[in-house]
Image (cartoon, rainbow, N blue to C red; front, top):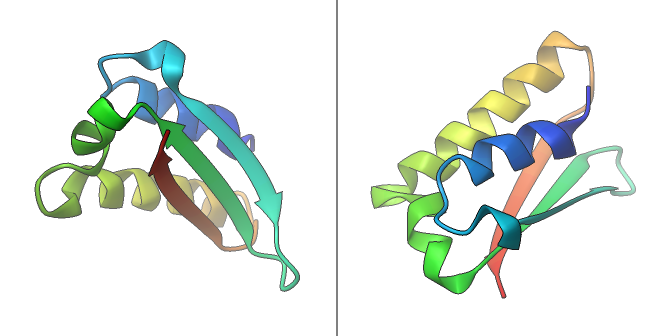
Length: 81
């Protein structure tokens, strides 16, 4: 499963500037997959949502996809540039 593609699709569907979304995947020492999401500063509110509900929903969908496909734990970090 391509977590970058899935995460990118989910994030781009909620931002105003989808061309400014950058998503990269890394693996840390204990095997956890880390997905870094960079969005335009003006889109941070849309990605995080009120009380973090949108960000948590994105994390839940990607993590569920990981478990269904038998992969390791996935962490998603969201930041702006």
